[in-house]
Length: 358
Image (cartoon, rainbow, N blue to C red; front, side, top):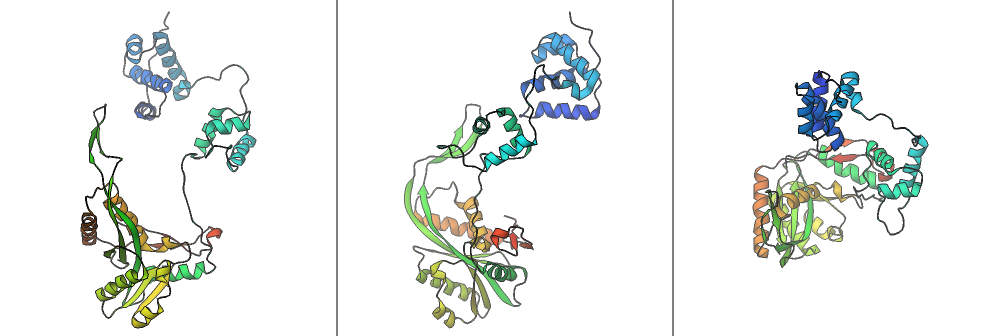
């Protein structure tokens, strides 16, 4: 026998919570059905009609109507089950964290929830997953970093940062580097229609090579504009040829050029002596990320090169040139800020972040 239906009156706050629960793809079926039952009951629907729509027995609808009417949202949670439940304490959490600092079992690249639970021996895997989620620990995500061991890191970084935040008056600050071996790959491309009716762009896994180009680029810090040229190789002679074109673009101006520590960038005293208006500034060892043109190379890769197909090396070069022209039409300088570093391992007094319209 079905108990007499209880009236359900929803507060605005509870309604928002239940509606959000119904919309979320992360909601499990059990909680979704309970939320729908309460929402339909609040709309004045009968117990039997709700049961038919939700796909449960009428007694289940009656149960959750009563539970919500008596206890609100808390009543929609499961009551504690009989029997002894495992008790996990902060000591358990410390054991999980300690285990994460150790290498995973032999043959595995990383820890997983089941591997952690198995290694702990007395901790349920569901608790392990809850603990990881609550501490925002993602076992699959990976980030890489490179620490500089340059003993003069602070002085060199301060020199480069100083040019960004307080450039010398009437001087031009340029960030110069090369992006080598950009491949002209030809792939079949088109739209793929999925069984669910959606369409997405795709490309063939197979490709045909049409050669490579090396892109030399100089980013003007004050404007964000790019000067670039293509080359087959990236030897010292190509680098100095590019620098000659850069100096020609800024006649009779003092140039401060920021470079990384590539061997072709070093030991160019003869060229510098012939160009007394040019001064080279080198980023610390293993810290080429201080060079703003590296940011631009990432933008170029994401907006112009990734996923593109080229039938010839000439087409690739023309494609890059067209992108640079479009980029320069809307170019803006990167906004770099200086703040105290809390990472002692970096040996840096400053850290940098960049922001751009691209």
